[in-house]
Length: 437
Image (cartoon, rainbow, N blue to C red; front, side, top):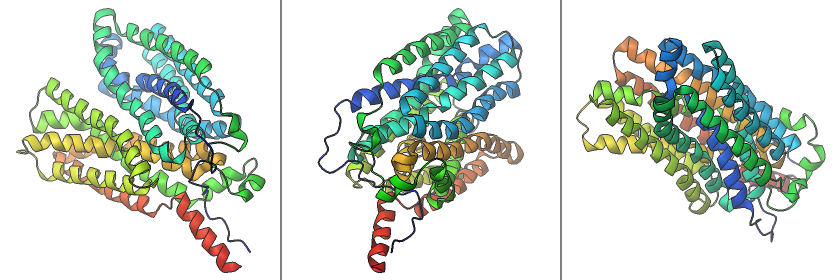
């Protein structure tokens, strides 16, 4: 008599015994990284180009914020649909389609005649961007063995931070020299080139039918998971929902911090715009470094377990939020350490998060779980930064707003502490099966 399967748990080992990892996996990772860099350069372009767009179309600050909201509104639902498609039709088709949509839309922004046109094109470009993340997670699950998986996802996720730094460094200068349209033209040309790189450089692995370095489902999964069965199991899985809630609350912390950090440093520590911007770069750089390093630690030090690393990063985030909430001034050099640690924790968690999502989903649902949980993060993006700003406006205190982020960190830690990793579920089910025999 078999114990009922209570989640989407699949083998966490990732490689069939004796199988040799494909040497092409690093080339595949480079291709996926380029696609991720390109779409996030577009998603994050509104900030660096916002002064030029405001002057050109006579926009208010609220209308500038509307451009960012337009990207989030389409990005979140696309993550879910694209994850399902990546599982059903393969990574290559979804990756090429997403890259092409993003490239065409950002090229069209060069000719955008009005603010509403920009809104529509940015929203459409995020449909393309939403195809990349779940495809990237599934690609890593298929190409990389478990001992390298979190490191690979961390490297891929670092493209977000690199794109933010690249856009901040190049787009304002380009817009000042040739106008904001030149910025979108440059990104569009880059998008076309990257789409070509994906077409030429990415292929689905030969073992995608069930052999090689892909995650291996339990035997009963191969026979019963057809059509919508996997999706229904996904929606019933407590681990998927807990991981999604973890991403939602830590998304509130991450994007509130990144959005409000410059204003906080200017208002509380009286830093100039350049110095405050430099601190933001420090935060982003620490996050970019933290993603692959936390993945490497998970793969090697924690023996492939993801939850301990996520708990450590969340604890770092909580510590930083509490310090910034309690000390409004006088931190001195400690402020630099807190900003760096905030980046390491509140920005650097995405790699382990994506890895755990993919491993919970396994071969049958890696894309779907990655897309569903990432959609939760984007709910946090929608509500976190405005709530932080509203608290500051109403209370007149940044300390209260940082305390709110500390509470969100505690809730996130509680959620991920309850997530069962696939190997733990497999061991529990094996023990239950033995007990029934």
